[in-house]
Length: 113
Length: 112
Figure (cartoon, helix red, strand yellow):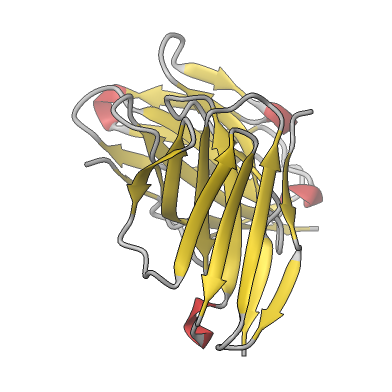
């Protein structure tokens, strides 16, 4: 079965600084990988996804992520964060065997003015 | 239409009540999902419907009863819930194959 780990529960960065959120997955074949963002009391919004092909994926809101098979990682990056980026970020993994995706425990992003 | 609409947004119910949550999408997605999310936790999968048939039930108690009357609608019928069932209930839909879900904004359920 697939699994996903987000090692950082909280991350604090200053507005305008760069950001990297870590995600590691476990799955025997090529997984489907996703990053979602959730603001308080809201549903989840898909930032980007990886299925195959180019390992650097561009998403919405200026986010990108890189799939590294050798490290079983799919880290999320943004060159310059804005105060509105403060939210909970979830990495998720799925497979081509069923319609189920599994979420990591999430990383809460705090932005300092 | 690229949205998943969930109603109601908030629901307070007693432990003896029967209520239903509703989810609707018009994106032509043939897979629909119910997730439960407790505060400060990730969403946990409850049910998956594929082509209007229940394909995954993650050992959810029978007091939660899903229904998919057609390809656009998904309901979650609630009966005799417990206070620990209070949570944000999220509906999602996707193309078959799980190619990234579209989530609704959720129903905030409080059981008193």
